[in-house]
Length: 209
Image (cartoon, rainbow, N blue to C red; front, side, top):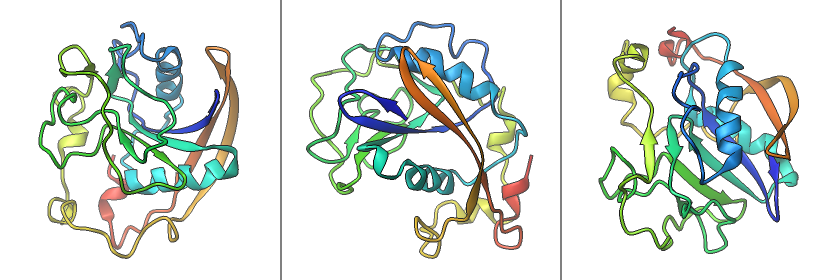
């Protein structure tokens, strides 16, 4: 959680440290260039996790101390200084929109980097002034290097395309293993080590390493 005019809570999809992830300049966000290696090094057991559950847990932990949340893939490195990470007053704002994302260009794509206030969950787009995706982001998730992320076990391939109507923000189970306070570019931040409960019977792939 980093404090500016508005207070933002960030949720990363953690990967093991990539040697080039933080070597490149990150002019769009000084905090980004400093925070990436810190968050990656802190990842211990390289096991899969329920990404949506982790985001839900992060949202709950952000409480009333934050005004909005950033769901940010750690393998998507911002390069363009015009990228807008400001408070999404008009509603949910897709920073890594399809016309800007280096890999995913289909109209229904809403992943990568998404900003949401605590009150707005429906609007997904606002004009950014950026007209091209060229040199806007760098994608660092190499499938040849991260072979684990390409594997599917049991019924995972079929289930991943279904809408989960049972789990969600109100049902996520987890505990906070530790909280670490640090400063990123002069801004106070808190890193949470969240342990998600895994139902091996329902999702055996959640412990697949």
